[in-house]
Length: 227
Image: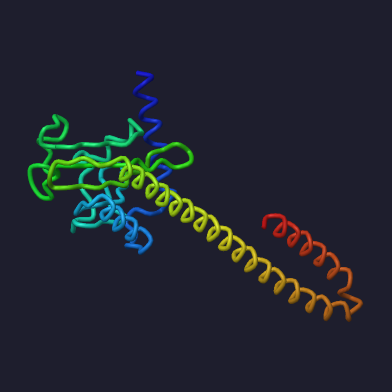
């Protein structure tokens, strides 16, 4: 029971990391597309993907050799790497008991060979895979596997840059909001001083104006502290 709760909590934390990245469903980007193009050329395969594993689906940030943008998570080869946290090599899927009846093997895109490198973020969560796929059984050389690992590191650097940009945008929006509040506060203060300046010209209203001034000043101080 404790193990099941740990797995559930870990998965919720992983999904939260993916959500913070704000990348699921975003348009194609050249930086990611070039990575999958290079992965295909290095490994001499027709299909390569940057795959992210959401709660119910596998979504492709970049893809080469397939038209679809996502599949059900339960059909995903990449999902197997989330728990194991290590590269997954399937030399012949039709002979692998885990995948031989998978619709992605028995029908289009007719996967036979699969090699996936897990995309593990700095907090230790597997967000997805960089993978290469062939329609025939095969293997990869050590140099090809090393190249895939290097490319996966580049994907993670892009993720990190994306998070930094999100954080920067949030700070800029907060500063803009505070600047707007301060501008409005300054405008209110100027209007108030203009009214008080006029009222102080009348001796009869001086005491009332000073009391009113004190109340307004206290109000402005409270607003200032809340910003």
